[in-house]
Image 1 (cartoon, helix red, strand yellow):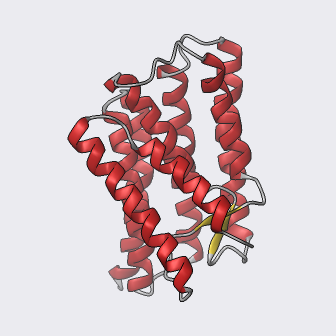
Image 2 (tube, rainbow, N blue to C red):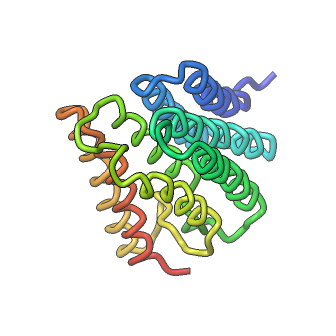
Amino acid sequence: MNLKKYIPSTLTAMNLASGFVAIIINDPFYSPLIILLGGFFDLLDGAVARKLNASSEFGAELDSLADLITFGVAPAYLYYHHVLQNQNHVAAIIVTTLLVVFAGLRLAKFNIDTEQKNSFIGLPTPSTGLFFAFLVYEQYAKTIIDYNQTPYIWIALPVIFALLMVSPLPFLAMKRDEDKRKKIIQMTTGIIFILSVILWVITGMPFIPLAFIIYIFISLLFCKK
């Protein structure tokens, strides 16, 4: 029996488990960190599958199911409970539900779309999930944002990101590319993400959502279909 082919799916299952644990714990500090761990497993499973030549249709389907839980359901659930808890109850339910539904649509579209090799069409679900997860972390850190101020922004954000996920707009994919210009853009984006994590660790301030906002603007400025 070739056990190597099961390694990527095991990593994907760890991603799925991370999302579920984040929901069960429902903690503004630990849950975003567990979702970030799920993001690590999400990156690792694809890399390992390619390295071991163990990619499969089963693995792709499991990956989408895991991403829906970890980067769709979990962040939306946490955002509802920790960011929108003082906002209009009905509006909060609608916008967070919209986030989950559109994440599912984005993942289903990705599975059947053969054009998303060098760039993504629509904002990737993990990017959306991590953005909202670390807005929840800010509720724990309480460093900059007061969610009771400008409440309409926090209601509008899930709608904006839901639409971005299913939009026809191209977004940067951090994959190997022969185009030198694109390599520079990818490297710059990668450095921004690394710096955001370093600043977060040093200061305790959640710079990660800002990094994703910059990623969106870089994609809209420099990515072409």
